[in-house]
Image 1 (tube, rainbow, N blue to C red):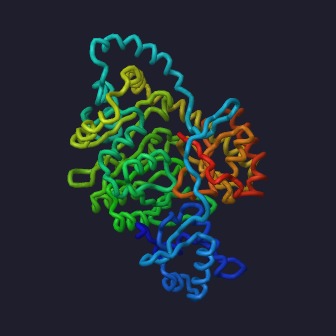
Image 2 (tube, rainbow, N blue to C red):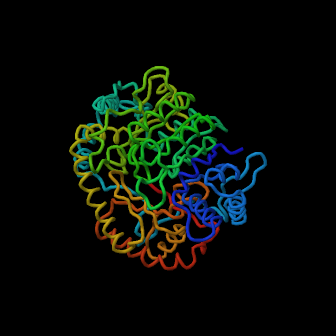
Image 3 (cartoon, one colour):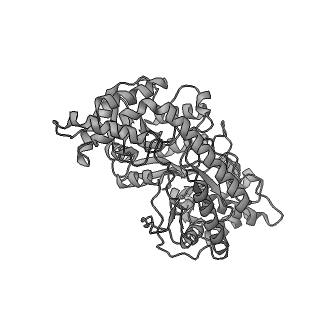
Length: 494
């Protein structure tokens, strides 16, 4: 039975201004089809009953029945006994095997900055410090004490009281996600995730045996109708609360700041309602904050103190994930989990099953760089602001019909390309020397074919080459949008 369902009122909000000059049944079917393709109606979501939707839209039931029938015939709806009409996607689903870059390929699958300028000096100083640790075994299960203190201090500066024993250092944020999933999820447990989202997080949750329950995140101001709730921040909080009540997930994985890939950020009131709803269900909240520091326009300085992790006793557990791989360098594989002591102890006990310790030299480098983070982030803001302007300018010049949001932070733009041809476009671009991640890499079961993630982290020359490759591939993608192999691989992304 589907975990998510749409009420007639919710679907009406998603539809927006759907009526055109033609037959109403066809216009309704076309709009629902686009909502499914874009992932705003997640796969396996139950649509409202024909009678209820007809009453809400002030249509005849015959009109809604004809629209649903057309969607079923096209493979976008399926009739499930006892569940009504359930959203589907037709055709094959692309697999997610990695593809090698190869010589001469420009790799835009990685939304990542080059190393911070101060890293070489920190690495040399850390290497000189390393001999002090050589008499010991070198196996470090929880993290160096002075590094955990430096991480705790950053939380305290944000207004979140934190002691070093509330911090567990990990091999990057990816290990943190996988460790949390393996520790707190059992096979068959439900895990709520945003759609679209960071694909390696969904991989980790699936490997832990979770059943994924999606909630939609959109880009405010995108070219498609946006669900309007209490806050127009990208999250349909009413649908999210309904999903929590219906699915009762064991865990919710969320990216509240500069969400990957949409760039949306939760408003204070949305955060409050999310935490209240998860507490009511006893759902563990995992807040992935790996992009939170990448605040190009300094919007975070105008928000109240962080909500995630600041709840009192009796509320649902909250675990925060941090990392330096986005802010300092991807080659520094140091991340961490901030949580209450009892949860950190449980995670520490589970960690040796897959990892006997976090590299000491990298920890020493990061410990030296964290006190410099304010200055480093100033440079990062300037780099990302310049990259954002490059992408906005080149997209407007090359593809004026595309919808490119002016993101306020993060590492990439979630671009609406107007047609469900993202996979075909990325495969065509590969033949032009460009690797780039198609929209479906960030969704489930092939959704988000009308979107493309374009990093803002590359140079002027590299960005120009990428748009030139996309421009050459675009006509072929429009001519033959389905002309890609059934097993065509999608890239790993960061």
